[in-house]
Amino acid sequence: MRRVWCVLLLLVSALLLAAQLSEASAALRVDEAATRLMFHSDRAEALLAVHSSLPRPGTARVTLELINELNRSVAKVEREVVLKPGSNTVTAEFRLEPSTYALWRRLRYHVATVPASDAGTASGVISLSQICPDMFQLNLIKPGITSVGTRYHVRVRAEHPVTSSPIEGVSLSAELVFEGLPSPLSRSGATDSEGYAVFDFDLPAVVKSDGEIRLTGTRNGLSAHVEDGVRVDRTIRVSLSTDKNIYQPGQTLHVRALAVDPSKRALGGAELTLRILDPDDTVVHRASLKTSRFGIASDDWAVPANIRLGDYQIKIDRDESDEEDVYTPRYKVRISRYELP
Image 1: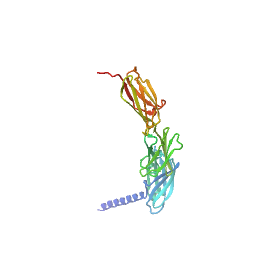
Image 2: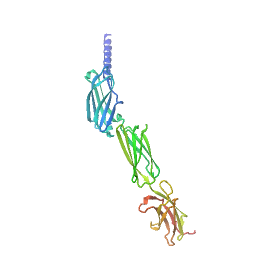
Image 3: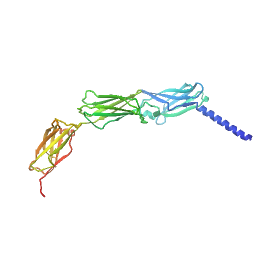
């Protein structure tokens, strides 16, 4: 019976000792969710959230290290601070520029009271991507091609570079630059709770070249920049029609053209060049046309009596030096003699 009581006493003593050790080790605790790393130009300030359950203030030694991708320490700060009961914030500065590469590093911490025998310690490793809430990047969402005289709709999203979570409150300035315009088209705004901002630009009626859009975002001293090209559709579209599809040698071919601008409005006063090519792509007829205010132009070609039979192609160009300026679907007619079965 005495042996049983000794065993029970040893078990109770072991449980009490374990409880004391657990209480000692829990005397210091780092709140990793509340820890932050804030950037200021080329410096980073670590704000380590330490909770002390000790009954009175005490001195603690805090060691903070930046760990790179190769698990090597690239910066180290050691400090002795006074921790009061409850929540504390320990600060330390590192030379670190804000960039996406910085988010792949980690912060290793070690906190121990002085002397170390009075209480336990707290140590661990935190990824910088989880404690840098101000870092963001900009993603641009825009049309692949637009037309002159229309509204250009642009969406921007600010998000965390690693977690892709939306960043709210990013101040944005947008510029749309075109060669030949006296000043760029400017807009400003801020991202909403989902990280989005919308900009609308009213494009001028005359644009001689493609443009460029530039966006800059700032938040809490950090900034991000993105730019991309703006492709403007300046192609004139011409539709062709003839009075029939088959002609005999000696007859007259009547061709009619309808020209519209990229905004699908009738293009008046446009100077066009009409060409008719034989089966060997040799020009057999050429004419200069000018569209009416309704975008219409027409021409007649007297088909020679001794012309070669076959399929002939009709093409329209605005300027022979820039054939991409006019889009004309392939249009063919056939020159053939009528033969009775």
